[in-house]
Amino acid sequence: MLVVFSVNAQDDAGITFEMKLSKDKLGINERLRVDFTMNKDGDNFNPPDFQGFRVLMGPSQSISSSWINGVRSYSKTYSYTLAPTTRGNMTIKQATIVIDGKTYKSLSKNVEVTAAVDKPSDQMTVDDVADESLHLVAEVSKTDPYLNEGLSVVYKLYVSPSISVSNYQPLDNPKYNNFWSQDIPVSRPVAENGTYKGKPYRYVILKRVVLYPQKSGKLEIEPLSLDVTVDVPSNKRDFFGGRIYSQTNKTVSAGKRTINVKPLPEKGKPVNFSGAVGNFDFSVTTSKTVLNASESLQAKVEVNGKGNLKLFQLPEPNLPGSLEVYEPEFSENVRTTVSGSQGKVSNSYTIVPSFKGKYPIPGISFTYFDPSAKSYKTITSDEIVINVKEGPTNSSIGSAVDGGANNKQSVAVGNQFNFLKLSPNLTPISSSAFFGSRSYYMWLLLPLVLIPLAILFGKKREAIASDVVGNKVRKANKLARKYLSKAKKELGNKEAFYIALEKALHNYLKAKLKIETSEFSKDKIASLLSEKQVDSTTNEGFISLLKNCEMARYSPFSDVQMQQDYDKASEVISYLDKQL
View 1 (tube, rainbow, N blue to C red):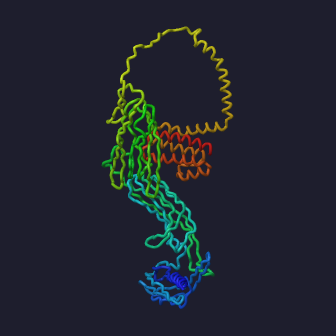
View 2 (tube, rainbow, N blue to C red):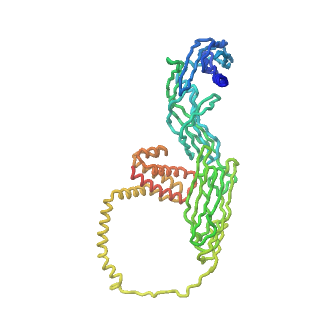
């Protein structure tokens, strides 16, 4: 008996009987479809009186039944087509039905009837329905950021539950002029429930991008356009009672968005500000502070936090001149999400002291602009003293720290003065005759030495001529120098150098592919190189150089970075010439 009661209770809990309306607002010249749906067959169906409406058609019945994995699915629907007889707020009252001896009632629903519309919904075409039910929206996280403050743009496709989308493809990707941009990949679009203008919709996220404005003022974000294949249900049904769908293609666009970029305040702007915007921590550390001469240590200058980590220069330490310092090794560990870039960047300096003594490394300052506080903040590191305990002593009194008014000197230990040389070791000046001298015999034997050298040189030239691969490499290097000659002349002049470098890269592709690549975006150039079967490493290197050329217009670049970009450009052009 307990099992029987439990089964009956489960059956009662699973029975549904509800009323569905085709719309909750219509013009007096439109039609309303009312469906009464149940998931178990019943008797004595009693419809409402439909006060304020005239029944044009109904009731019509449709039954759907199926078995899936041993589970039965059943649905029965009574449908009515109504025409309103007056304007105002109408109420469609409850309907009743008896299922398994119990009476079930549907919930009443309100309908608003307005004045006649120009184009009744029952006369709307498939394209009209698609236009009203499909929307592409660009959601911008911030419309008034500061210069170099991050913002995100999320493109969402909203689809009404009354239609379905079977396919879509982008027609034109937006260009983010005057922005530093980075796409956040969307691995697999997943439909989610949401609302659009107060109505329930389903939406998918198609594209996400993080932008850092590089120019103040009003900047425009170009629209994203899609070609969407839409399935729109009609009022017709097939033999089995299923809805018949009509298919159409629609072009939807997210529309232009205007971003009002605020300039960074000039009031209170420190002299050493390098363009960092966000919220950061700053530190200067060394791997050790006590060592012997000729041993090495690592000094790391590190910035971590959230902001435009890829768009500013790290401050450089002022080190004593008696310390041997190598070019810094740049390290970057930055992750970009919809909320912006976060992580850390650092420069690691290798330092080798040559003499015994104590060498102070003065504290250095890092300044950034905090958008939330709307003010500049400066962090200064502590002074670090390097103690070299064993090694030769410096003959000078001290070595000054390079640059700055607060220069300090390293303190030498031990003997600070060397004795004057008492023996000059001078040699007398004498003259000798050319005949019979060493020079005479060298000139005499020179032709005998040159003959075998000429033979070896000739064989070497023949070997070079037969080396096809080597000749191609040398030809590629010569071509790289040809296109990069002007850029090399402008090393040290940031703007002129990167303009010349960008022209060299585009002129090279123009010469090789016979096309105007200056009219292409970086994405199209990357796609073009992929079509030409250029390997991914060379492709990414070429695009990275173009990005550096673009970013150099708005960010400070050192001579070291310019030299690195020049060397990388020579290498990339050489690799490209072998593959194109």
